[in-house]
Image 1 (cartoon, rainbow, N blue to C red):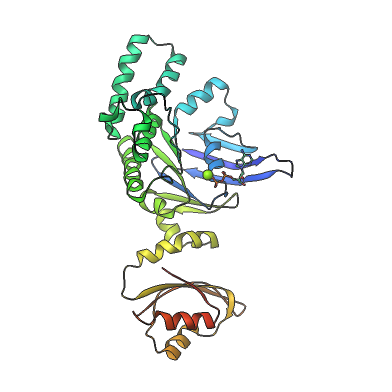
Image 2: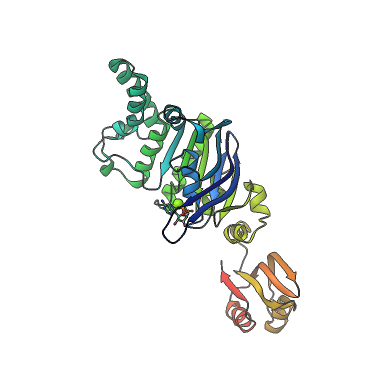
Length: 334
Ligand SMILES: Nc1ncnc2c1ncn2[C@@H]1O[C@H](COP(=O)(O)OP(=O)(O)O)[C@@H](O)[C@H]1O
Ligand SMILES: [Mg+2]
């Protein structure tokens, strides 16, 4: 289990400290695929880099299976890091080495610390690397160089490399953000496979909700250096509580509402509207049979806040949009 306890990270800067993470409490259960989602600059990469101490927290604890790794000495820390594989958006492969040699690289580092016999090491390592390449579907590329591979294939090599030391944990920082949607899906399937087949616990950092939606069991929404909300994906997705979670999740919720006939519009109420019955007025004045698919609006001191998703019959979208414009309701076609 990975636990972050009251973790804060600040970066010094001439114009005052930059707070990247503030009072983070987070538990990643063993066996989970744990998504951490947030907008750019929210603190996601810093968070994941604190887990394996690529960044040192300014205060707070990082517990890996109960051990506070911020207290570990150099030798212990390198053991701990072998237990935590990492995958990046930019693959970070060694261009001068073959696929096979890239995957073998972390094993070579281990070998020096273990001082094992050179010949035995090479034989065992070669076999292990072959198994890993088979797992990621790249057995036929063992002798290729990274420049000869597609983005998806490079990420597969990076995944095999991350697994080379048989880690219990794998951290993925925007692992699919540089890939097209089809390749993204195949890499996500692979990550899911690894979680299932090898029992590896995976932390997935992303700014894309569909990544969380397609593979994660748990999610934490991070906003402005803090955890805004956390829970199982089904709980957080069904009932997002905070504005940021709604902002990130609701577009997906709309997709899951299915393909009803007509145009889907998402209306956003940000308090500019008083609590007049706007949808009834719209239906009556425009003579349009508007269907409400989803509504999560609140009336606070006579002003309306929240989201609503409506469908409008084909051919009547323009008249509805004109009505919404005239009433200062912002909307987006989904
Ligand atoms: N090495 C660094 N030095 C100074 N500021 C940094 C450094 N790394 C990140 N930051 C700042 O910390 C905040 C969080 O960054 P980051 O963790 O990269 O966010 P995310 O991955 O969610 O986009 C940002 O304001 C960023 O500019
Ligand atoms: Mg980042």
